[in-house]
Image (cartoon, rainbow, N blue to C red; front, side, top):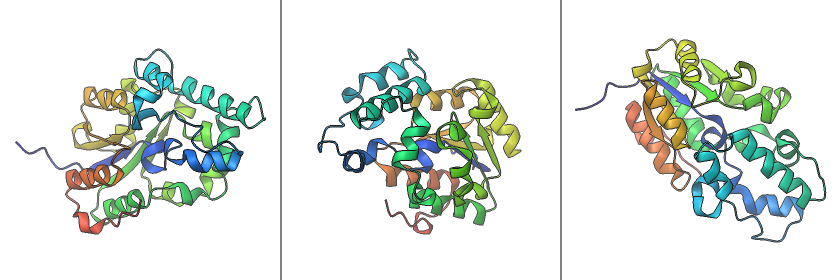
Length: 227
């Protein structure tokens, strides 16, 4: 039995809208002067390489704990101790905000608007990690009907209240919202909240965008992926 077509698309921010840190390890090594291949933790791309990521998925640590650890680790490797996530992203990614947005996601959001659907973001640490000044320069954020950021709400996915806030912001019933995230724990939370869900697999970015487009009944040829 076919699901009802979603009336809204709800996106995670980091790794879904933006290219993940995991995918940019070689660039990070070059920027910090680290030996090529020295960054081996790959999170959702290869969980067996990343026990800390596995611990987060078991809820033994939070996502913020995970990235705080990685920021300190990278700062120490670069000879700049005491990095937090904002310091890490300022050093590595805060040159051109629009350059870290996935082209396929940009196209998908444009097509969502063209098909008279709603679109929003549900993030655990959008402004906390990136800073308000950086986000003001990111064009895709102006295309959002709703942005729910735990930086301000204090409610982290997969808490059901986070999804409820996003549903309210979109003005669409939960069962008509398609939620896309790269973490199964957050996908499970959205499912419990009554949403439709689509896992974003970093091992197949184009396929994940195509799957979301198909769920929204947006023709794949309308999405010009360029990952």
